[in-house]
Image (tube, rainbow, N blue to C red; front, side, top):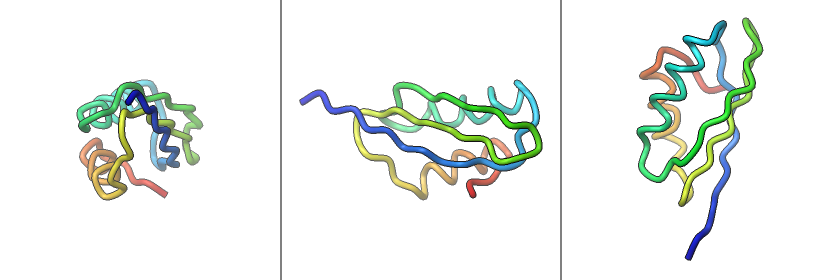
Length: 73
């Protein structure tokens, strides 16, 4: 079975490419994540689309974003 799941979240506090890299790195470490796409809006909520092979645990996603120093809204 080759299902792809997409999870969309809004992350607050990101302001630059380094922020995007930090969040992307942490989310990519979650089991099953195959891609992370960040639509950066400095100083506002930034949209993050996570592609994975199975549904993601929302708590794990929030923990990964928090580990990078940001918050899911």
